[in-house]
Image (cartoon, rainbow, N blue to C red; front, top):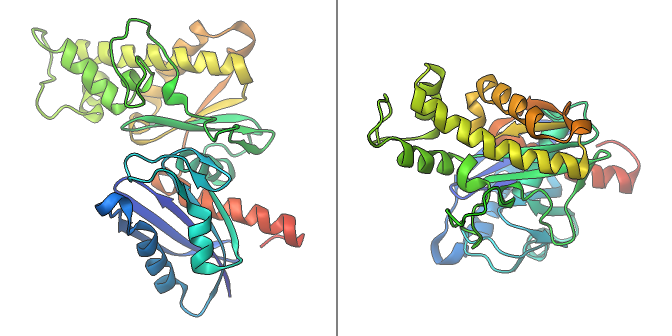
Length: 312
């Protein structure tokens, strides 16, 4: 049987899905081996794929990588040690003339959510993934928009403060991910907790504990969450005025705060946004960590349909 593989390379784990006739028939997760600047990552992925392949034939591989990609070349992935790296060529060396598509991991997750998750039914939406940092992807007229240098959807690097308070890993100051990511929430909590009457402590701080206490009505926790919402809603209001999407789909670990976060975010967005875009919808992502794997399948499926003229 013909098999398509969706691969999502994360900083900690790599998720690999095998799809046959449109169905996920096998799934695997392996550790990301970052030894010697990620030298062994691709060979270990191929080893796992070959074990999963069995008697089937691989006809396509869609892969997400943590960094901007132009024409199959990853420009930089600091957390893997790759800079730059022609990922498509490396896959071609292993599997020859198969269908291959490599893109940013958040873009791949965007495709997954578009086809099977929180983005179903929207022709134009922005996916935001809120975890250690903030990433995202843009769907316009049912197509992924990657931008000239693969940086479309890098929502985390919209500037939302102008006092040079927090330096971002990108080298700039006051990017929204320094305030509205899980990392940003903890930084804000560390600033606000000392000397305050709160159930939060500086030990074992996380976005989950902050949201848990905020839901119970803790005043300081609510203040921390509201600061996060202010910064993120500010960034989203700028995006909405630029591309006027139907919806924002929110995913990533912090999105597990659920409707508590979404309701606050939508309400503040409506106060900050330009009036024609205030009715932009807000949705929770539904695929979790599997979004990139499904996106890898669908991005290859589209290439095959275009080439062969039928649905695989």
